[in-house]
Length: 74
Image: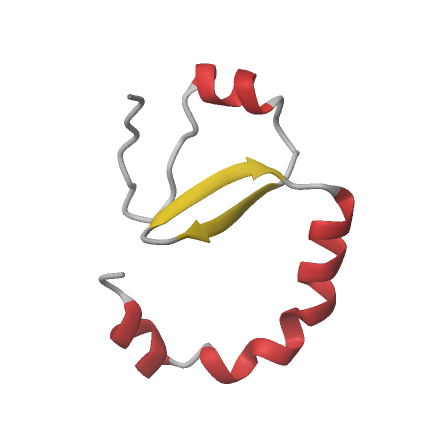
């Protein structure tokens, strides 16, 4: 099992062996997907990033301070 510490800015470093197995390097995008109560991290395909950018502005209704507080512990 690989472990990484969450920083004060809510960031983590992906351990080197995980980056190697995913085939990611600096500047690449990663995708996070829910599978039940677990999160799967994978290398994002170009379509993933384009889709994320395209719909990003439509999700602003969930970006309030109240939402951040409500979901902080998830």
